[in-house]
Length: 380
Image (cartoon, rainbow, N blue to C red; front, side):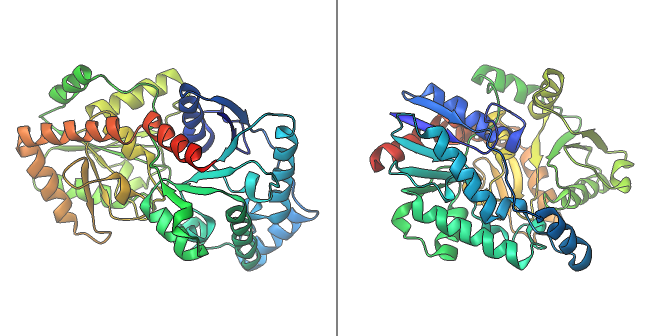
């Protein structure tokens, strides 16, 4: 099969979208197909767009988004059409709506993504200020994309069900294939057992990772750590990826590692070492379309403590690879879970090993891309 894999940016750039298209494409290349990566598309906006954007920002405190603009979407699709015009392609796979939304082609088109625009509007805080026109155009672009796709593939049951409800999509047109972990190489089984054995029994290492302190539930993670400390449980909260409030940074049980660039060897080594030493990943997200960090943690045999929201519910199976609490769960229950698992070394080991097994069998890119290719092949 000749497959075109399209993104607006260069999929070879590991820094784009947390590396997700990079790892998707890398894994697709390992499958028995011919892959054409098509990206580097230029954003083209209508005249006076920036003036209009500034007007809404200053006078109405609203955002006019360039990502959800019909003129730009049509320009992306036209560029993609030109780039594939002389290629022999059996199917087109996109990870973003825009390049394929207005693509007129007889070649079957597939979308593999974590959520559609309408499902994020009243969910992600950053989308709440979108101007009425952006919402209208964003939903129109999605509808155009739906009409042109053979199959819509989502990374979670939440995204699939939300899309079906919001856009009245026929359920038979929708599939679910979870994303994999954005890591170069997972530890071997023997390395994993060594990591688990060497995890500190003098202090519980909790790891919080995320660019958004508020949306990822940073304050909840801090309060859990603080309560454990108050109850004489020696805990260290390691924080990666975001700016944190001063009162958090100045707490003696917090270690702030800042942003780690996984395209840099030294930062990647530090990131992997922190995962290997962590007793738990603690990311109690308030909103999460998917959350690849949970798959990454499982790759290192690290159980995840999080919340029942968005796509997380597809990733985390309670007491298999961690636990997902209710969004309004009491801090005390987080603490009780951590103490219960750590207090029983055999149970903790089993949890770590089953977390690793979830990565090996379900939450890695080779399994994911193989499943997506099977959907594509069965549909063309």
